[in-house]
Image 1 (cartoon, rainbow, N blue to C red):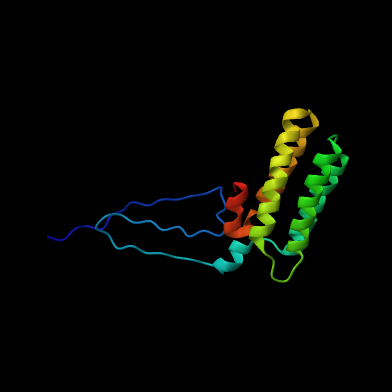
Image 2 (cartoon, rainbow, N blue to C red):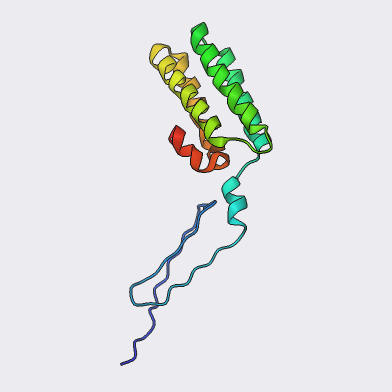
Length: 144
């Protein structure tokens, strides 16, 4: 009662998986797992200095946008706090994420009120996606 090994194979191409492990198996078969690279380094993704630069680009966009003075102050204050955390040796990433969440809420309010808000919200979401690897698990606080 010997079973012939399965000749199935799977291939994934045209994509890049960062900070993840892929594990496949089939019931009743031997399961093999391979991991290459330093997973903790992959999860980190970008440096705090790169996060600061991305937040600075968002700051420029907020300053150029047409919005109420109160909304601008709120958004810029949140960006400044997140930048300050990103620049620290041991940043509180959850604190940075909470501030970015508050800024995101402000941008959503502006989005509903003005035409400029749509492009500003889009810019904010692009920055959030880019810094999500740096935030790690704290990224869930802003929905990424």
